[in-house]
Length: 176
Figure 1 (cartoon, rainbow, N blue to C red):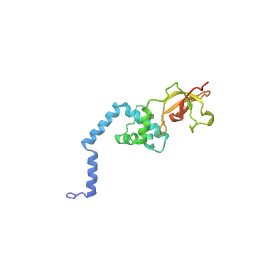
Figure 2: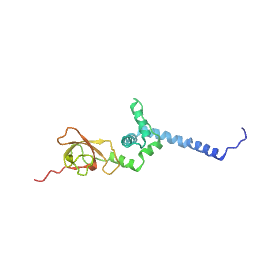
Figure 3: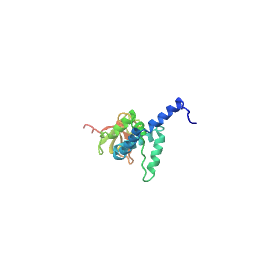
Figure 4: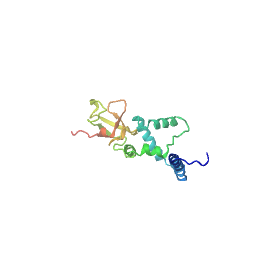
């Protein structure tokens, strides 16, 4: 087989393989691994997005499954490639979710709020009813404005409810 020339397509494929394994690319992968280990914010943002995509299948379901499997194994941590992290955490909806996650809560724990009349997840008997905010760190389920999730306890109820920020407002005592 000596003396044979590679075809144009073979040369193209060989070039891609050499490009993927160049020194620069290998160094970039090592930098990403170091960043993943040293920067907890990257891991937190990826965890937030895994919660979001778990609630919104089928987007990235294969990555969510791999993440869940690694999470269930003791001593294992799922480390995405830089390419996977960029796809999962770099989209416009992902940025909305991540920004909402890091944003200060509009209603801190202990605040008294009211369920808005436009809240679609509650029956009419709960709309306009006062509630206490008991948690502001619930997993985000959608990428709309006001998507930060709260756990609230409606007055007179025993079971807390999860609600988006856009579905509640501050309680104002009635004028006497």
